Image (cartoon, rainbow, N blue to C red; front, side, top):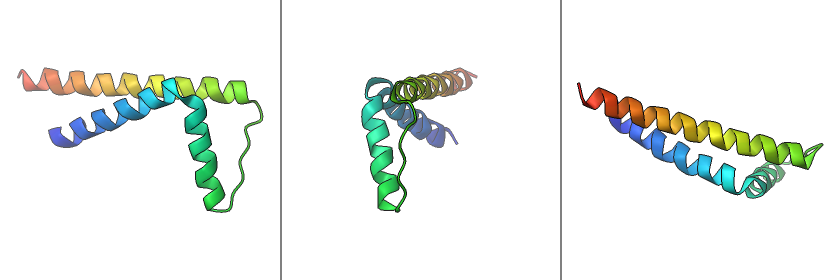
Amino acid sequence: MITALIVFFLLSSVIGLFLMTKPQGAIELQRRFYEKINWRIEPISMPKEIRNTRIMGWILAILALIIILYIFINSLR
């Protein structure tokens, strides 16, 4: 259980940092993926899409911090 939480922490930290620092890159990756499965997506408002992507990155990073704190606190017991 703890190993899964640590893996989740690492993944969400890396993805969260990527979304915070490179939101346009994340949006482009998503567009490329959807084109491969024959869908085309275009944001209505790119500034809003970038803002929302950064917010999503912050949320992931905060969740990662909560997870690592949970692991640390429970390991002290």
